[in-house]
Amino acid sequence: MLELRPNCECCDADLDPASAEVLICSFECTWCAACAADCLGGVCPNCGGEFQHRPIRPAAELASHPASTRRVHQPGLHRARQSG
Image (cartoon, rainbow, N blue to C red):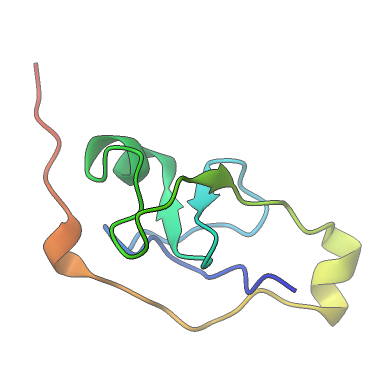
């Protein structure tokens, strides 16, 4: 069962378990869509793999199988987005 980690490993933003904007790799490294594109270039820095949208667990299942509370953060990966 997927952990549904609560944050982006790059920018540490909170990620809703029901969000369609969360990406994971095959090792379940977890990223927001903005960091996956802007900071990571679409490649997981941990395993070199591609990203996929994280499946959304139905709300009825979250009650008995809640999302993880374990945060993983790698602050050195985050690059401020360039404007204009």
